[in-house]
Length: 132
Image 1 (cartoon, rainbow, N blue to C red):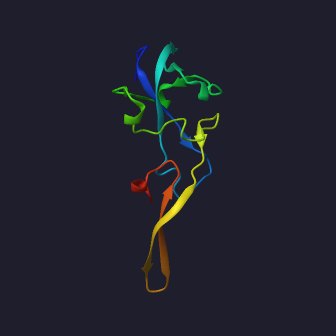
Image 2: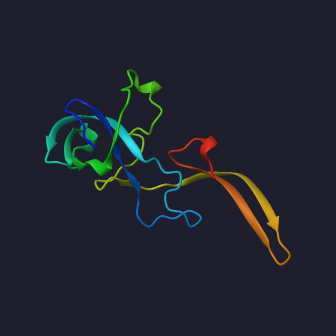
Image 3: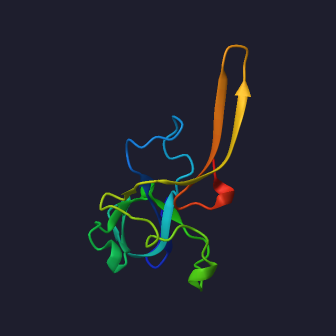
């Protein structure tokens, strides 16, 4: 995949390694932040991005596997529905920690030998509609 200087891209982020919810790692975690502008091409598969001051401790050159093309750059920040890099506590290695906010619902499922409880949990950085 190739991009041009001046294009806007989303940057891939991942949940903190080792955090697990219901034996699934990062199921509803935000995958990309941005968009960020390409300032320079570095080699065949790397691009330098224009990052804001909040991400100044993050190296600004990324491989294409960590980037996703932005098809339309939003004009106003309130219309931008993706995860804002300022809203999450992003670490220098582009990871963040998910925390549960509240339990929205609970249910029981009974088998012949046992009862299994299910909880619907709302996670940080997600809306109530995205609860699992």
